[in-house]
Length: 511
Ligand SMILES: C[S@@+](CC[C@H](N)C(=O)[O-])C[C@H]1O[C@@H](n2cnc3c(N)ncnc32)[C@H](O)[C@@H]1O
Image (tube, rainbow, N blue to C red):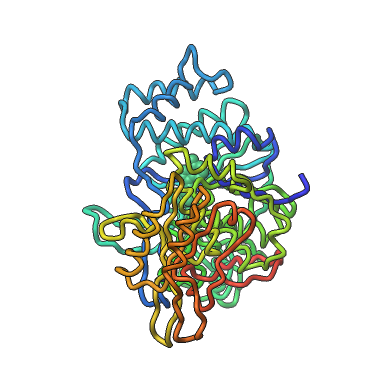
């Protein structure tokens, strides 16, 4: 393939099976849904940063449904998938007896199938990091043991990512850490020792640090004899060790890294966005420049952005167009448009047939609308969830019409049969909503009466620019595929701009 980097829009199980070769990945990190039984919303800036709009990005609720039943059959001890490890089949069948046919088993069946594919695509020297939380980490560790360990793989660490987040909701202790399970495919794996610079800084400026060994012997480690003399004289310590010139404090398996709070510069509004500092540690430790990094649940692309900066090649997969479009924008903002020339974008409709496929599968109809609106608006529209009074509006973007005022431009997307009545209805909606204009996107070509009716809607003149725009514009999917994009002046950016980053391998690791 002529591209170093690949971004896939689709279900990671299909993508890995079809497109990712055996033993081709050096490092895989995944941050899948945790079975939290919640919906996660992308936060958009509404008109001029004043307000925010929330749109569902992904759902983390699992049911014992047809998909789970189909998945479970693959683990059948007699008729299941031949390539699935025997111990994993045994495990899933045993868990069925313990957990029953419910949400946890459905979740584990989904993730286990992906873990088996990840094991297949990892190189012999490859590493795998699975990000989860205590909801399912105990089951996931069993799954990972069953996939990795029988064939010479190894469990390396359970990393606790610790952060401060105060919700005051729980009855027990605050839930302030996530779990990252680290496995390698064999005993020969890439590992670059990281220094714990924060510990180095505090220990060395003090000149000593204390620790307890073998239960209760207190030990003083001395780096600077003069500064530590007072402590030595105190006679408080059982043992004193002098480490002249030592500057290494190995990285522990608990990492204190702040979550992305509402004020964080790197915040893009994507729910569950992970801090770049966390991925920097994983990528720096378990890969080298030029290595291939995979994130099969890539969200808003944190792994990808860091891999790009640290000069790794990467493959990202996500099942929602919102994620994919956000990643493309993030890479553009951070590293410039030229970065896109080295990226193979897969799964995004490139012709009318693939657009129809997206539109006509009931599972992806909403995805079709989101793809059409976000692509045509250059990511400036907020897709709509069709709740309450917003029925008939599939998305909105905003233009400024004075120093402080904004007006919406509405989107309606049709994938089925259309007629002039829908144009009249949409004109009614534009008027009711006091919108500046409306964009009617259609898979079918519009008829002459529809075009005529749209013309009758007239023009809207923006008082700020004096430019007239069509009150109702009809755009076909064919035109979008051919590259037509909205070009209204003064549209408002609804997604935060990612920080501009130099395309360099300078790690910013500070602990
Ligand atoms: C917890 S988020 C990942 C967040 C990411 N680490 C970041 O920093 O932005 C999980 C992502 O997995 C995606 N996802 C869920 N199921 C998927 C599947 N079967 N295939 C591909 N992506 C999936 C969701 O759309 C969501 O973006």
